[in-house]
Image (cartoon, rainbow, N blue to C red; front, side, top):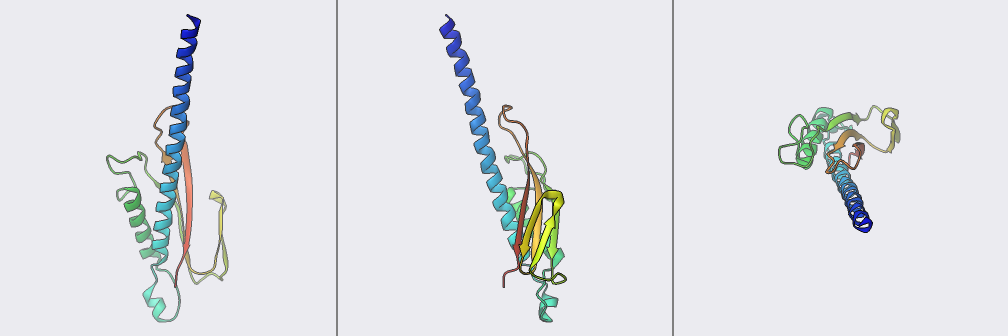
Length: 160
């Protein structure tokens, strides 16, 4: 009789371990998808050259257009609405927070060392660039895994 109880407890324990493993694997895929989405958004926004300054020979990024492009790309790739809340029937449940968005333009001397100690992020930039940091909360599949919140960071330079 004790073997049957032991076997049942072992089966339950193994199911919990499997749930934990599956949830960790799904969370890593979610992190990679979010990082790729952020990288695409930052790269697209960094290509928004200021045409008025470019006509005068100054290589610069248009901050307003860069921000709009970054948000549009992030929302399309992560399936978010205009307020960065996940659309219905998507995997994410919590709003994606935009923690930092900065355009580093010609007013800095390049190479420029961008540093944001609040989010432990620094990067060396060789030309005008965009830096973006978002916060993403992982919607746990099983209650076995504790809550996971990531601060995902990305930067991209103007390509010319």
